[in-house]
Length: 179
Image 1 (cartoon, rainbow, N blue to C red):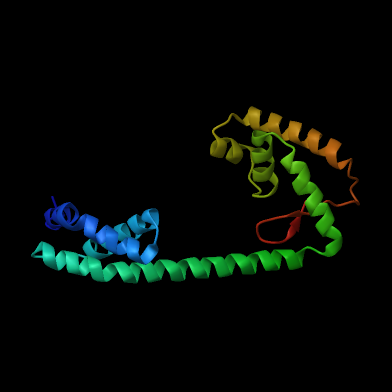
Image 2: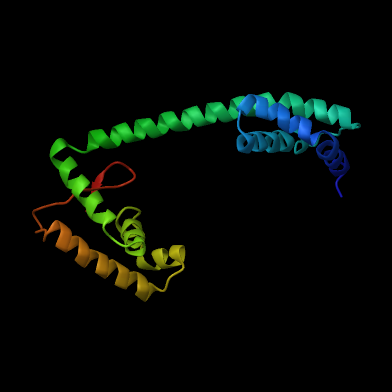
C-alpha cells in the first residue's frame, strides 16, 4: 500500500461528503460534482505529495476543486468553440447545390436498419476497411459485406441510380467531399 493511500481513505471516509457538497455548490449537478471531486483527488494525490494529516489533505483537495471546475469549464468552452468552427467550415465546404444531395443521403441513411447504417457510415464516412469494421463492431467479415451490399441496394432504390458523372457528395469528418 502506498503511503498516501491511508490518508486518501481517511479523507474520503471522514470528509468525502463535505467535499462533494462543496463541489456540488460549484457545479450545481451531482454527476459533474463527483467528476470534479475525483479529478481534484487525482490532482492532489498523484503528484507525490505527502500529507501528514487528514486536515492538510482535505484543505489541499478543497483548494483544488475550484481549479478543476474552472479547468473543466475552459476545456468545455474550447471544445465547443472548436466544434462550432468545424461545423461552420463543413457548411462552407458544401456548396448550396450539394447541400440538397447531402441532405438526401442523410435521409436515405436514416431509412437503413441500424447495423447496415453503422457499417455504411464506418465504410464511407470513416473510410474503414471491411476487416476494420468487423473488428470494431464484433461481426464476421462476411456479415459486414452482406450489410454493405444490402445497404447499397437500399440506398440505390431510395436515391436512384447514380452514373459516374453524377456525384453524390458525402461529407467526411474532415469537411471535404468524398464519394
